[in-house]
Length: 185
Image 1 (spheres, rainbow, N blue to C red):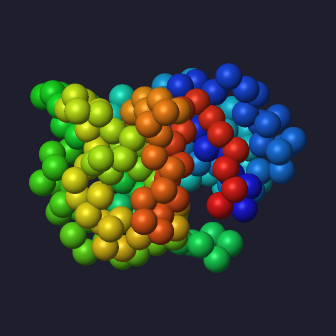
Image 2 (image 1 turned 180 degrees about the vertical axis):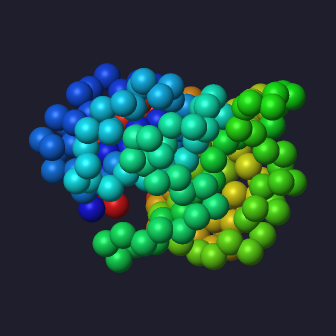
């Protein structure tokens, strides 16, 4: 399934035209957008749109733009199961930022079922993350993919270089996105 995946930076493309010309079957947002960045999605009614919010999101635009919020949800499409986890590791006290402690994510994922495709803003700990707490990965997410490996994990949030980019973890294919990518799922 051909997928247009967006993360962390206003896409430097015409979203609608790209979706049509690339024959995209699904659009995925991995978060950290202003509402205005994704407004063109409202004009694409015939392609399903799913996503999760990032730590810099308002947490209020998905429904208006026709995006199904997959945070702690499971959705089935074309024979695949999709799930999502929003936000990042809590690195500051803010009532508005979408962030979780490591312990909160353990609770969220404690009984989470295995899925085919996992969407997350923040990566698992040790996979394309950084030492600085603002860009550390989730410990519980690493445990989850070790115990219940999805086929594919999609994430944004961090800034790995091409030199240290991790693309595979056990049986799980890791897809890092910054800006946009066309990804075959």
